Length: 446
Length: 143
Image (cartoon, rainbow over the protein chains, first blue to last red):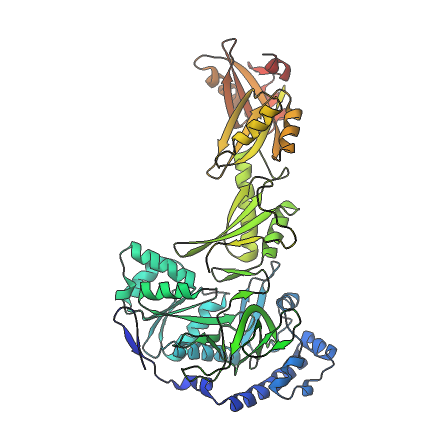
């Protein structure tokens, strides 16, 4: 199949053996899922206190779980379970076997820690490889990986998958945009992975310094870790002369690589042989049939160091069982429309308003009235926290006010890991709402 | 010897400076002098008024956040070197000025300097006995 791009770039989608699990017949997939679910339930029951307790409380024994259909009998896992078992409480492997830890910000200052043994690192590289194949990449591609390297799963996740594919991976990590553009141009980069907002920033900067990305060999963008829209996709594809693909994942499950779009760009194929998706009614917890919109719940079927049963992602979507024109048999999810909680994502970072409140409380001892404003300018997301000044915090000295601002910013950065702009507002000027407080104003037009 | 200064937090937006001034006008309070410290997002309006308690209540009732600080008022001859002479004395006393502002008086040839030190009591002690005229509340508002 020949795909055409804006500009004069073309490429051919060809079958890659790494993708074969995406094309297995449904019954064969079900058998594999059932077999893996039995093993993972046994594993968490034997090795983690939390799951043994939860499974006992549900009146179950591991042997009650016979097929993938029994998954609905298992207890849910929520984000706070990972916080409450910080740091190693959900590990189902001994530290001798664990070869990697990653972490993401938690809800109250303590991060969430996730573990991988050698097998898990291989599975992760495999699913990323399958994602890259579904984006049309192959050996010989030059992948500029501008996801952050570090505790964040994005950088290393894409890195190992790219190497496994046989692509040439350039670990640029994030930041230093001029150098990113120089490398993209000089190294003949054919694909880039980063957050969509960072790519918008690269686009703006390239324009400023007179580099036309459409004239470069770059032909695919791999974007994830934050929500983006079809309108953004159209803009990016036109302005850069590339195909822009969505990759889905979350730290608690494995990182990026839970699912990925194919060249049809009509939903995210979930790598169901490793991550079992369900849609539930977020209020009742009851499973919903394919096609209905609800909260996405994911179970890791093959992870060993830290398997997670029925994780409530809070992402709202629906599952598509209808076959995709690409021929993949694994189900797709629609683009994430919104979340069931008040979490928002900025520059790839998950943030809860409660984290901001924790920081403000640390500084003031009492919670001031505040508002979070999210904006996007020149492709870069910006978060501003507006805080009302009160009699306790107000000083007649500018220096003291600047110190106060800096202290707020430092405490917030300490908890969420991002620098934010703190502005001070007059008392009683921020909007009050009755009942459900709406602390976050998102002006990014996502 | 210490004078109470009121400060009001105002956002750097059209109309925000007028609002506290209007509140004081409605309460019939005259502003003896004022200074406005500004940053790009907000300002701090500092004022000396005859009855600071009444002014504070009026401002707080209107929803403003009010800070009360102790400042010193020093009277100087209104001619060249008036301020420089005072600053030399302050420097010799070894205390640091946080900020200051000045105003001239109508009826004589004196100028009034308002100083904010980190600690007003320390400043009074350091400046007592120096060749400076610290002005009390009574003298300040008698004019």
